[in-house]
Image (cartoon, rainbow, N blue to C red; front, side, top):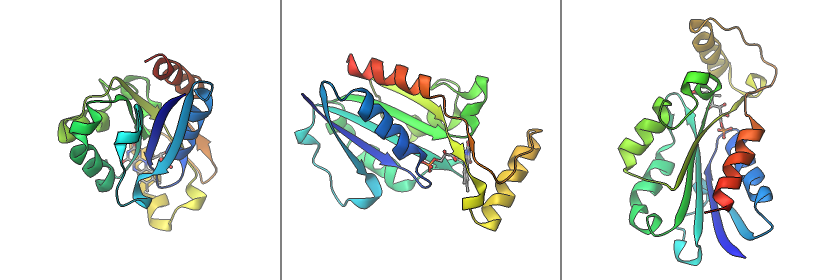
Length: 173
Ligand SMILES: Cc1cc2nc3c(=O)[nH]c(=O)nc-3n(C[C@H](O)[C@H](O)[C@H](O)COP(=O)(O)O)c2cc1C
């Protein structure tokens, strides 16, 4: 079994769900530990051969703790087999769904200097009924500016087949 760590940074749970899906997909030959990056003070990467790193975007940014972890652990991470992914709503658009054209992903790499063996951008999920009045208003405005109307009910943009394909590629590393 290949010891694998999946670290996620998630506000509403979709990034965690994607980590769980990948973990489930590779469990035949990977022993996967899934950890919330915000719930730990330190992580010892020495125990792991492979590392999955996933973070979501809120108001244009990945969360600072996630970026900090990537910067602080960059040397250690460079000795592992890695998958880095970002989850955001912009990735629902065909021309903004890959590591080379998703601006959040490009900025994350630029800011942290991280290079992963496999990189991915996944479209996330919105369930505005669970968000604050301000957040609902802002998200609706952002969607309206790109000509889309959304309500408060759940909209899942995540392409689970894409997640499985990335999991396959990671399994083969
Ligand atoms: C308050 C709020 C702000 C968001 N800001 C952005 C944004 O700036 N760009 C974007 O592409 N997606 C944005 N999203 C969409 C999230 O990235 C998406 O919902 C994702 O699935 C969240 O993942 P998580 O549940 O793991 O936190 C935002 C969502 C919320 C609720």
